[in-house]
Amino acid sequence: MAPGPPALQAARAPRCRSVRSATFLCSGAAVGGGLGFVACGSRAGGSGGSSGTQVAAVDKRAAWSMPSEVPTAQRPLEEGARRLLSGELGAPLATLPASLRPAGRPRRVSGRSLSTVVRRTSVTVATEQNKLPPLLRLQRDEALWSLARPTIVIALLRSAYGIIDSVWVGRLGAAELEAMGASSFAFWVLLLLGEVASLGVHAVAAAREGAGQRRGVGDAVVQGLWFSGICGVLAMTLLPLIPSYFGLLGIPAGSQAFAPGSAYLRGLVWGVVPLTASGVLASGFKGVAELHPVLTVNAVCAALNFALDPLLMWGLLGFPAMGVAGAAVATNVCSLVASVLSFWLLLKQGVPMRWAAPDLRTLALITRIGLPVSLGGILFTGIYIALGRLLGSLGGANLAALGLGHRVEAFAYTVCEGFGAAAATIVGQWLGAGCERQARESAAHAARVAGWVMLPLAMLFVALARPIVSLITNDPATIGPAVSYLYIVSITFPLMGVEHVMDGALTGAGDTTPSLLWGLLLNLARLPAALWLCRRFGVEGVWTAITVSTALKAVVKWRAFRRSRLPLLSERAVA
Image (cartoon, rainbow, N blue to C red):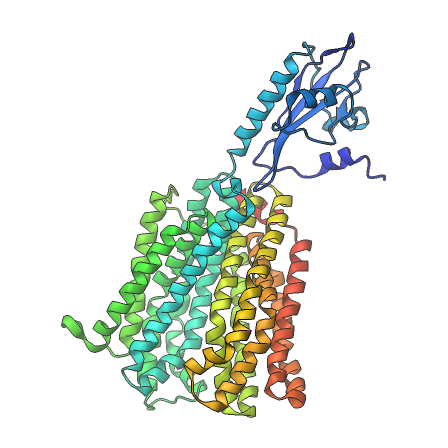
């Protein structure tokens, strides 16, 4: 079957649900002594897009015309009227199916009314644009940066928790610091368990905000809080496994690090509910694109954590001396404070949160969106443990170099993470509004911006690799491989930005399975590639395997997003 004229193809394309294409009929005008018939419609573009008026005209034989071009309200009305009535706009509407033709019979008016019609149509378009969420009414760059900047700062503040704990625990002694380090993998798993709810609520809340369902945002957050309780119950089942966990790491019962490590990890398990709840509430803010309250809460809690650590570790000001377990208790208190403050601020933001029983459909949707990403993170950590064994066989200094390189690289990773979270919100809101084209274009724009932003950052890391590493360590055996790691890995910083944006876009679309599958496949490929390359190039071969896999992940995830059925999330989340 032939695709039909361009105007017909445009008519078949899905329309932005938030901007209803209200077709109304107005009259023809006396042109050269003959009567014509005019059909007028309105449409509005999106963020950074266009808004304008569709006007179709016919000749005296009443053959309808479909507009192939839109004269906007900014153009002179006389020019739009002239082109409309001269038949320059469009192809005959008589060729359209009945379902696509304007309903009703046109009425006749004087030619002087045409300017009034166009002017009124422009007012209608402006009104429809105001139905979009505030974020989507911004220019694309403004919308992206309004989310990326605070997200980057929030991520840096959250990373401060670990730095603060390390500083204070290091003063207790080497055994306590080893205990906290040994607990880091288990704590990472607990964080990823909470991320299931956070990512799911983020995507659902963004889609509902885009659809103009602010109450639905609150309902999604409430279901996410129920999920936090489920995570707490699951975490409790891990308590009896703590001795076995340390045994797997080569820390048997009776060793110096076992007792403090067990106490620290046990304290973190008891804090899973407030930790997960604070992430869910932060996702509610992300969904409605209001991140300054989250920034304030994280700044307050980072300062509180810095103050509580010494009080609870050494028992100052009448508090009991808990040792390294005090750091876990301080983290739990900060998570609880963050949850209470976020709940109150979210209500003040106009997000109604009413008590409701667990809704299995929403919980299943949240799990379906968040679980693949969290599972991918857990598997990614396991792959790096295997990679660490390979590096250890090449020399202990190489493993130390990888850890040092990761700490330095964390800043670049945080910047990419900020763009990814921004893309998730923007794509989710556009899909909630029913605008697939704008969602795809916004994701592509975010990927381009992230790539360009990461390019000078990559050049900076290459130029300053040796001075930065030398500030952290003076061990020559570690400096060499750490500098080479930054030299090689920094090359793909722009592609790392693209990868994170595509991960965020797929999250906003509710289609996170490609992130899991491609991430798992290419991260697993690092092991045989590193094993093969290290025989020829030494430790630089391992760094090259990491770099190549990062570049490939960016390409395949970009393609996965292009092929994704984006409206799937908005249809299910908004229903």
